[in-house]
Figure 1 (cartoon, helix red, strand yellow):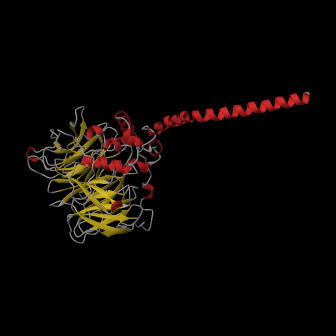
Figure 2 (cartoon, rainbow, N blue to C red):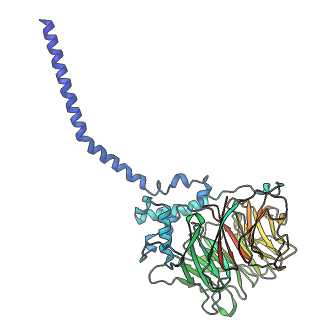
Figure 3 (tube, helix red, strand yellow):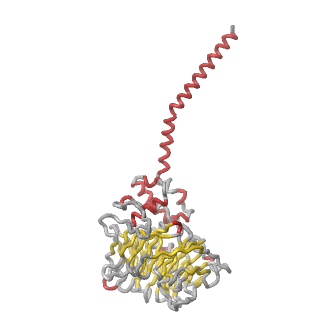
Length: 488
């Protein structure tokens, strides 16, 4: 009897257990939409500005290569600055559309599928602020000076394909400059007063003309002598001449908005005579620009609270006895370098208002260019044949650490229109020449001659710049063409 009761209780227990298991299974099935909702709530957090611009991981200080096109890109495509734009990208070199539209389409293409563009305007502003701050924090110093002149043979860069397109200019080209936040964009200017905005296509196989803008000065109809991008990449600043009371600086707004002029001219005219030869935005957190002119003056311009109002202040007017041909800003101590036709190189501390050093060489100086990686290294272009390029360590003041150059075949004159550019890694310098060549110099090579020369055009080459985003050299020439040279 006891055995039968025990068996009955066991059977009842098994029945109850099976029933409970069925109820649990049904309950779990009914609750599954709730769990799905929970994971749906988690996903939007991944689209916050912090997580998506590939942001936090790609934009840490140790990742220097991402400095060039950082989270600053949304600045170019702010909805408030693109009012009235169509959002369609130009597809051919004959398209003359608004640059703001082009910038928006380029940004969208570069980060296709990135949900950050669907965030609120408040989130976008927050992202921009962080991006601007990171732009300065990510500057990374690399010691390259110990490598100068240490190799008996140069490292050769192979140029395996070249393509040439018409510059669309009617007169001789003058300037070539890459956008600081997206080097798929570049501008050219010429003696016709036109500034053309271009976009690199198909990994450097071609380039599309996005817009053409008449930037000639209002009185004398002079062309831009030199051009500099604003660090945010949304405008271009051009300098002209101080003669006849003409405007000295213009601003080309690439994010054109309704009711505002595309090109505006700054009211102040601090230079007193002659051509304004150079303009540059120093790599400092407080945005400003510096101009150098034929009146021997170096002038710093700082933005006021009012929109597009810049106030100039002369840093010095008598430290050069002839035209200031080039200016540049160094990272440390906020030093402004100036190079003059009086053969002088001046380092001026903009913070304390006095010269850090003065140096004089044997021939006139035509430009100065800091190294992008080693903040103590800078290059000066001089007029001495076969020693046109001089390297200096700012800590050694008046000590030249290397000199190299080339022998010109077509002309004995040294043109100030011939300009140089550093490679992104800071190890090479490219230079235009009076001959149809691009000369490349490896700073590690102990010889004074070019490490290699590339025949690039039919006439003299003014400048060749290096892209950061792909192995490509872009050049301009008096043959009125733009050269696109693929390298490895």
